[in-house]
Amino acid sequence: MAFMDLHTALLFCATVLPLICTPGPDMLFVASQSLGGGAPAGLRATAGVCAGYVLHSLLAALGLAALVAASPLLFQALRWIGVAYLAWLAFKLLRSALRPGALEIQAAGRRDAFRRGFLTAALNPKGMMIYLAILPQFMRADAPAATQAISLSALFVSGCALIYAALSLILGRGARGGGGTPALGGRRRRWIDGVAGGLIVAAAGKLALS
Image (cartoon, rainbow, N blue to C red; front, side, top):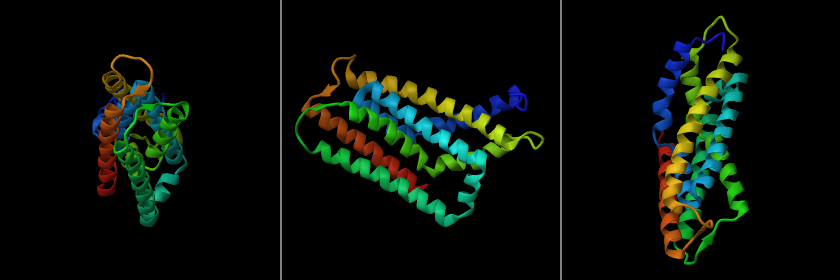
């Protein structure tokens, strides 16, 4: 990164790291997936979340994020779409927690972890505001804005990937008990669904009140 010195890159990482580690909709969703489907589901959710932030990166580079920020109505619509989506996920998990029976995680559910992670990040305006409020402070006027935005975004997405992947491995190991078939007994499955649903309710509330 010829247009960005090491000091600037380290300072940017130190600035966004606390934001990544603060529990929010993305982290809570990854945690819920790790609890329900083990580390593989958490890692797929992590990949989806990172893909959602790549989308934000492209929007920031193209200047479309500024257009959204300039329109309060559009920003609020995007925020409430995200709240509604998380509330729908929480409703499904809490409803499942009230039903008896074991659960075996199927391939379709695994694919959903990525898709839902992508939508959770893509519909989270907090991520977009990180790009709008923080990235410009680390950009130089004498270098291409789009290239700088993409490079800084790559640092942010990499930080998300590392933190969320570590979270997935830690929570997934505890949830799955060291391996075996991806299945959950009735009582344990209902407990995990209830906890996961509660986490996503908290994520929806955090997004609604932000």
